[in-house]
Image (cartoon, rainbow, N blue to C red; front, side, top):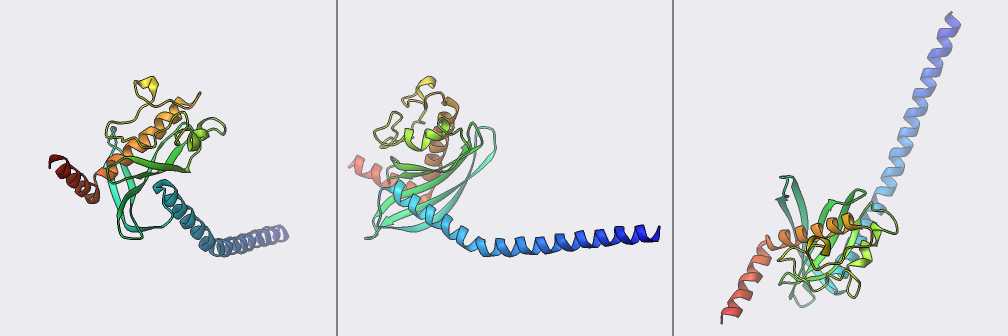
Length: 209
């Protein structure tokens, strides 16, 4: 009986030791890869901002965080990157916006000019069906069937099935609605920033003159 208890104790000790060692190895590997992963994410974001603002030579002058509630009262958080060119001229802002798609969260980065018109967009994250919902990264680009470039979501963008002017992705109406909702929400968040308010005020003054 004592021999059996001794064997069980040894097995528990060995398994515990193995778990501790493996945990230490995983923590060490995670520490080594954390830096490169963060650098890769930062580069992807920087490239994304250049792409949606349609400008390679730019500077992120300020980063804001805007919180708004959706129609169900759920709080949404938007990250807004105010962008200027090399001469300090305001180019508008790139806005991160997330909403629920068909397969999971759909995260987009949308570029707006100072007047609120869409300059470009890119998908940062999505869990949509490959070949269907995943087409959103191309479908709404300039010259494509669902082209939203140059449009202003001052009047919310909606798919033609809902009486709007935007063609939905074939067989992916849910994803299309989610994408346009993310864009509309991004616009509302952008227009809530002081920089956008100031620009709108300046534009109105010019129109009244």
